[in-house]
Length: 46
Image 1 (cartoon, rainbow, N blue to C red):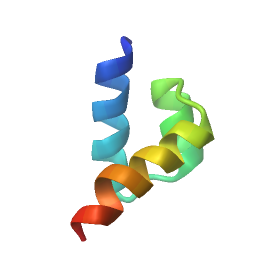
Image 2 (cartoon, rainbow, N blue to C red):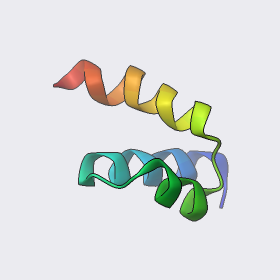
Image 3 (tube, rainbow, N blue to C red):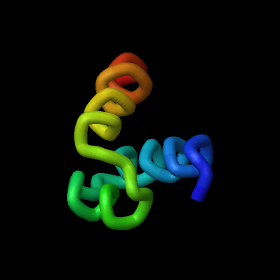
Image 4 (tube, rainbow, N blue to C red):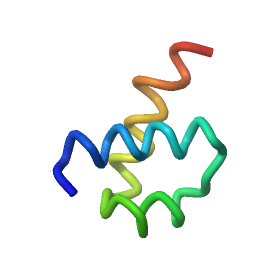
């Protein structure tokens, strides 16, 4: 999975309410990266 599709998939999973562990196992991203996606791209819109 390339980095852009991993970020997009992680964003979708965060919106759907998936846990960090589920997202890490599916996308291969680190928890730090997932938290950055949540802070910068999701929390700003809600």
